[in-house]
Amino acid sequence: MLLYKIGIGLIPGIGDVRAKKLIAYCGGVEAVFKEKKRLLLKIPGIGKAAVNEITSQSVLRRAEQEIEFIEKHNIAPLFYLDKEYPQRLKHCDDGPILLYYKGNADLNPPKVISIVGTRSATDYGKNICRQITAELAPYNVLIVSGLAYGIDTMAHKAALENKLNTIGVLGHGLDSIYPAANRELAKKIVTYGGLLTEFLSQTKPDRENFPQRNRIIAGMADAVIVIEAAERGGALITAEIALSYNRDVMAIPGNLNNVYSRGCNKLIKQNKAALIESAKDVIYCLGWEDVLNKPAQKQLFVELNAEEEIIVNILKEQTNTAIDEITYKCNFAVSKVATLLLELEFKGVVNALPGKQFQLAN
Image (cartoon, rainbow, N blue to C red; front, side, top):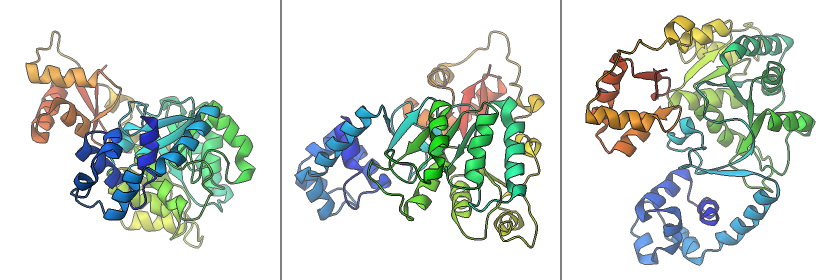
């Protein structure tokens, strides 16, 4: 089955969105490669060239090579339907169909923050990054960044200093580390977090890969914090993607005359990002304060109807569950699921989380 999971992502002209459509139409990833050509041609948006690649199955030879690599290096392939796959990212339409992961951290903890910024970070930016990360430590937050120079590097280092798990999202395969100067840092991250990528081995760190990987940084977090950024560049791209995913975006204001503060100031000025000065602001924006975060007191012996029990049983399966996944599993209409979840909130059985996610109250 892994052979086909890798192979479908290698079909020219078939991105993540179309790959998911193919799987849905055919009833499974293996079924895509076993479907008759004439039926594949009837699938909307799937061209003749792609169908020829599928039926020739030439991509599966490259997939076999990748299986050898991941088995040799103890890499975990995470398919978008797997439980271990980042659930927040799973519900982004263009989320990667398959990820490659080397590490130990849970990719679905209750709290995830992505921190991004310029590669040319100033001492001001680095100190703010270290301060905010340290202040987030009591909340056991997973810190996500891109292992680049500057703010990314500081975010990972600060997480490790404060015994927080951290994930480095790469713009290349797991057979190399870019920049090379971060190789030792990457080793520590694998021990106390993990490295994550959608790219196969032998994929070079080409410039066009990094905007693509930024959607992973944006999608797998509850919020994205921008610390120092120019008006153009990867940090601003990540912020825009986060907004499109309905994630919270926050930015540190900076000196008007500093080119690497203009991006943050612009996001704040355009009301695309909340102005933050410390982790206290982050905690407030996300509702993580002790008082606000206390689950509503449960009634003793809460009575649930049959439909509510179905929702509760689904939520017992994993820590955080998106409303789309609940809807898929219970086969109710979205509007009905929303109503049931609201009623369960009133009863103190369910807590609502950022990004339309829900969990059982403690």
